[in-house]
Length: 39
Image (tube, rainbow, N blue to C red; front, side):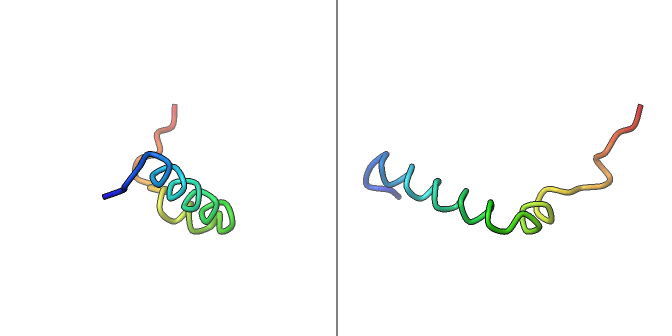
């Protein structure tokens, strides 16, 4: 649990910055080829 909303925001910002530094890591967590639909 977090002690304050500021602690939540700090942790969230740190995590998002980490993801921005390693875009291929984010891609591997969110790329699900079986969910891609073509029209």
